[in-house]
Amino acid sequence: MSNPLISMKTLSRLVMALIVAELLLVLLSWLFSATLAADVRPLLSSEGVRWFFAHFVDGLCSPLLVWIVLLAMAGGAMKHSGLLSRQPVSRRGLGLRVACLLLAFYVAVILLLTVWPHAVLLSAVGTLWHSPFSRALVPIISLGLILFSTAYGLTVRTFTSLTDVCQSLVDGLCLSAPLLVVYVLLIQFYESLHYVFF
Image (cartoon, rainbow, N blue to C red):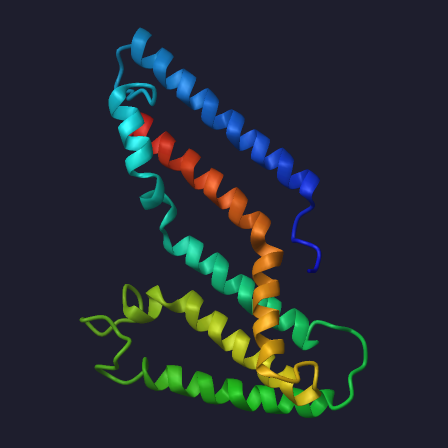
């Protein structure tokens, strides 16, 4: 496995900071609700504890999580295909031409699904924003990067099988694993803040 995006020392500091922030929020929400009688909902009340357990998974299920996973897979494919390497690779020019050709085909398909009136990926009123296209923009970009990297890697032989391609996607997820740990704690802190004050 390659080195993760952030060091374990940095990750442990971030995790500790987020845990301390969550604990302070729990304590302060309880103190504020007891002393100020303001519109603060304490996390230590029976309602707060029920909310915490009942909404833990709901808070984590967001498009941001999917975007992190997809972009991590695309990053792994780009890294292992040799696209980001500065070392000379035989057939690099051919690999770039093949990858660009596949990418051009992919972009053409996306354009066909978006530019014509009443295209499939447009909104009900015919706009790009607030449409299936805009909601799927990150997945569309991620898939394009994966296709480009895979075509390049297979052409220059940094990928020799589907197993190599799959391994690059998994390695991208391994590289981003620290981000997922931070994501879980950060989203939970954000959701707790929203519960307490809003």
